[in-house]
Every structure is written in structure tokens, then in C-alpha cells.
Length: 211
Image (cartoon, rainbow, N blue to C red; front, side, top):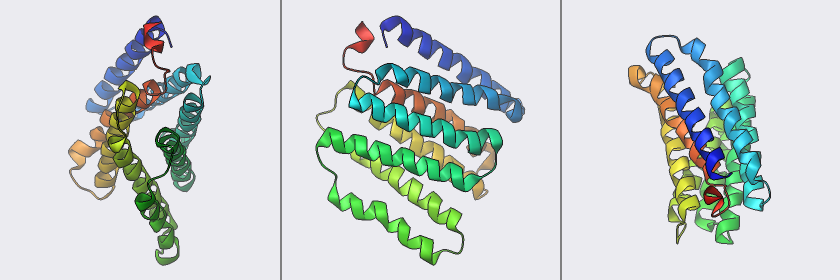
């Protein structure tokens, strides 16, 4: 993505962001859905400009699965298990991306990542176990990304993007539990689209923005 394309991408995302937040805050949350999803699709298109590298292909694939998950969870607003399972794939791809960067997996985190699988047997509601598997792997990815040293601009974008992703899902969890619903209903997408924009930018090859 060259400098001009980057500016167009950021300007378009900023316009969508302001538009859907304004609709949400004015009580028209249903009307904001097309603009929210357009922001995710725009991330996919932007990520496709970086598929010449393995890192770019992993990120583009993760964002494709993100768009598929949001189709079920946001647009269709049904088949939640499918949507969450797709988000599990997203976090699996980001885990692979981190492993490529570091040259290895963090073994202490591997046990934590797999621990929620036990809950599929113990929990009566498989959807809860699936959601926990997804969130635990997201949190592990965010933690591992923050530990990646020495950081460059792409790694910082990736770590910050995952951090905002965690904030989004904390809002989702709090909202579903009935906690601070007046804030968390808006906090979801307040954090979510910026997280996806940063994840998209993190896949751009070094120096690409200066082209």
C-alpha cells in the first residue's frame, strides 16, 4: 500500500467510524450495521495489497475470517457458534503469525491456550466454552505481541491492534452480563474498528508506506 492508498484507506475508515458512531449514539444502531461491516470489508481489501509476503498472507486470511465471523455475528445476527468458531480461526492465524516472527511458540502460553478445550466437556453450554477458547487465545496473542522484541512499527501496530481487540471483547462480555450497558454497547465498536485497521496496517511491508 503506497502513501496515497494509505491516506485514502485511513480517510475512508475515519469517515465510516464517525458515521456509525454518530448513528449509534443517536439511537439508530440497526442503521449503522452496513457502515460497520463496510469498514471490515475495507480492511480485507487493504490487506490484500500485502499478500506478496507470508506475513501479509496470514493477516489477509485472518481478516477474511474476521469478515466471515462478522457476517454471522453482526449482519445476520444469528448462528453465533459459527461466528465465534471463525474468530477462533482468526486467533489461530495470529498465533501462527507470532510464531513466525519469534521463530517459536511460547510454550508456557500453549497450555493456557488449550485449557479451555477441557471446558467443552465440563460446561453444559458449548457456546460459552467456544467463546472462552476464543477470548483466551486473543488474550494470549495480545500478551505475546506485547513481548515481541525488538519492536518495529509493524509489531507495535499489531500489539496495539490486539490490545484494542481485547478491549472490544471485554465490552462485549460486560454488555452480555448486563454490566455498564450504557457504555459497553458503544465501546464494542469504539475499539473494534480501530483494532482491525491497526491489524491491517501491521501487515504492510517495511517501507511500503513511503512508496
